[in-house]
Amino acid sequence: MMTEIAVTKVKKAGALPAGQDLVFGKIFTDHMFTMDYLTGKGWHNRRIVPYADFPASPAMLSLHYGQAIFEGMKAFRSADNRAWVFRPYDYLNRFNRSAKLLNIPVMDVEENHEALFKLLALDKHWIPGKPGTSLYIRPFVFADEPQLGVKVADSYKMFIILSPVGAYYKTGFKPISIKVEDKYVRATIGGLGEAKTPANYAMSLAAQQDAYAGGFGQVLWLDAVHRKYVEEVGTMNILFKIKGEIITPALNGSILGGNTRKTVLELCRSWGVKATERQISVEEVFEAHAKGELEEVFGSGTAAVISPVGELTWKGQKIVINNNQTGEFSQKLFDYVTGVQSVKIADQFNWMEEIKG
Ligand SMILES: *Cc1c(COP(=O)(O)O)cnc(C)c1O
Image 1 (cartoon, rainbow, N blue to C red):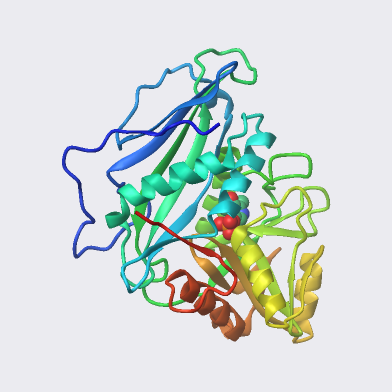
Image 2 (image 1 turned 45 degrees about the vertical axis):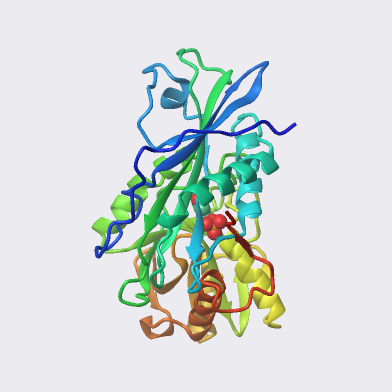
């Protein structure tokens, strides 16, 4: 049963800051969606309210034991001033998959979809229209029961907040230099790797700092057991182009199933480019490079869409990919996906859903 969403509007609507660059995730729109969960009562009190801080208990469980999940998706404005969300159901369904892994009560996907689109319709004027810009959508859930005993919480809050963001690549693509990480591991099979949860980000920070200190832009994570097979790059999925074939690690339980990864694989297959999901070792990547068969390497994720990799360093050995230049195929993927998102290219896959009202 769908319950009504109560709406409390701001007294005076805000506006996109004019004439300045939007920094990622620092400003928020007028409104947010929120609801509560209580064991026995389920998810309830669905409401859209003015964006604001909220009271929180210092003892709330998620602060201490990390029971929390989030999502990250985007809305876009097309040249005809209409507004769209890219693949909303893929993100909302993954939100519930993460919930299950963290023992968080699942939500009704249709109700979350309704809440998201109602919120977006209300704050539609916050969706920027310049090329490359978008409205970043951040749904999240955390345990807010105040008590210090370790347990599955009986009380949660869910929010959706919205933040207008600038173009990820302001001066065009710049391939990144990557360190193949052999000290830290991101996730392991049986752990939380498949969930979008703060813990996976908390554990990545030390490795990221080490990589920055060494002059690298990101780390490439290897599997936790053998320290041999490629998993992800930073907080993106990773794809290789070897002898014309796109190869990406299979979703084995420790890798986050990215929607951009899925989009890229669907595109490759529709274009007749062989795309394979399988285990791939870092040795195989270096050997392919030695044989001159490693054509391109790129990351995929909602924020950057495609992120070309120019250099890979593993145990002090560095390989340079495609002359440290953005590959033709990476560029083609980026142009196509961003073209559909800005509704300049026909949406033949039904990825875009219009924000009406
Ligand atoms: C979000 C995320 C990705 C990319 O997923 P998209 O759905 O493409 O944004 C990849 N890896 C990790 C660890 C992530 O959290």
